Amino acid sequence: MTPRPAPWRAFVGPLLIAACLLSRLLVPSDTRRALQESPPSAKTCAAVANRRGPRLVAVGDVHGDFEALADVLSAAKISNASCGSWTGGNAILVQMGDVADRGRDVQKANACLRRLQRLAPETGGQVIRLVGNHELMRAEGSLRDAHPAESSAAAVAGVMQWKVDVKSGAVRASYSDGPYFFTHAGVRPALLERLPTSSIGELVSYLNDRLRDAVVECQENPVRGRYLERACRFKDDVFTAGIDRGGRGVGGTFWTDWRILEGSPAEALPDAVQIVGHSAARCRPRRGSPCEPIRFRSDLRAVVIDAGLSKAYASNRAYLEIDGSIYAKWLEADSSVWRRRDLAGPCDIASGSNK
Image (tube, rainbow, N blue to C red; front, side):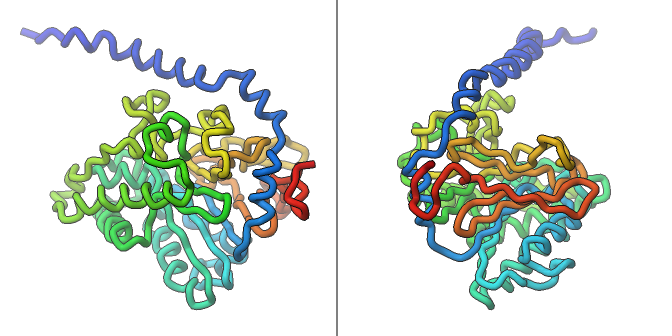
């Protein structure tokens, strides 16, 4: 006798469809239009103008494409063409997470970043490695998005090394530099309401502590067979996926899509420019096309730098540079022409005011 399906299963499909429709309504089109017409505030311009520190280069999601990562780091004068040496002087490199999955060279990409992190301090530089949702998925035991060429043994070994790096502080959940606040996917207002602080410095410490504590709890769990035992359980609000991503949480800093930040009230983090990855650009910039792989709110409250670097996406070469102002730089498809856009263009950087 064939067992009858549980009654609740009949509601799964409609609920998923409703979740998808709701996610499209979370950022109304009139809100987007209003933000497109909103220039940076004088306070934001002053914060950008008053940032002091060495040149900072930020690179988005890599997804196993070592060749693309090496190309961008070389173009940004951070490393040589093979990622064998640090050439960035006293610069700061921030990589936004999601080095894992999709592409075949996850181990090579991680080894590159780990090597540069070791070498950079010799000339006063620094490498910040952040965590993405794909690293968390692997730590929970899921290798569903691994490239077929990546062996399970290599993926499991990579997770174990990642845990060591998180525990030592070599890999973090967040980072800040002046007004710039870096997380993999961003802090949405609904999450901020549940956190104990909205101070950027305190938020960085809080998020990094939550990540380290969660990984320490599952640090010593074994590997069984070809797969990592599903030992890590990231239950804190900061790790949850919201309904817009098919989850049941509030929507944490590893799962917030760009459209959420695009329509969030500017007052949510009034003193910060959020820099995020996670939401890949799908278009390829060509001469005369409107495509720009690095997208930003016109009021400069948030910038998404997941340019779709990997072959699994758009194969775009792009990075963010902060040096006196904040610049998007990208390579035109099928050419050797690098374009640059000053994202703080409406600001008078010299005086720290908006024009």
